[in-house]
Image 1 (cartoon, rainbow, N blue to C red):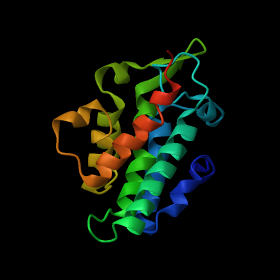
Image 2: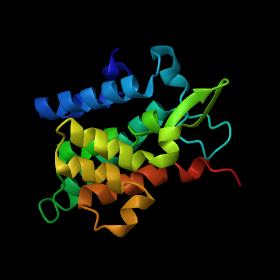
Image 3: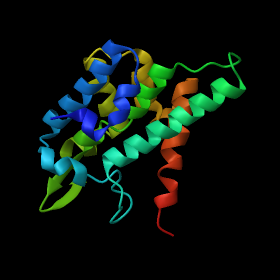
Length: 176
């Protein structure tokens, strides 16, 4: 399975070791979730919006591109005033929803919460998966803090960016 085809932004990570671990995280999540390759493009990015036209990988790519845009604006305008770690930011954005492959399952032709997903939401399962593969704590923090679970911790600057980029790519698709 070629994860780079699904998420070409992985190649934007300069640190080869980090890039390799990001790929391994997606591969392991696919394996643990029991997903078939042909199912991957069909996985919705959220179960909260009925018939959402965006899949998990499109959403991941959009959040990553938004985070990269914020990084580039910061560098251009602020310089070194409040620097962001580009590779950590990219890895966190690419992996922020990796836990959804554990939170969801396909049942009777529909995507639903799995038993695992009812016990642990994707920010927690995703962070645990990343931690188990030796990803940096800063990346695990971004994954864990990108949703409401992060409301009880002080988000790093990179986690703050991913959090807002994620919601900027969720709220416009909400119904009503």
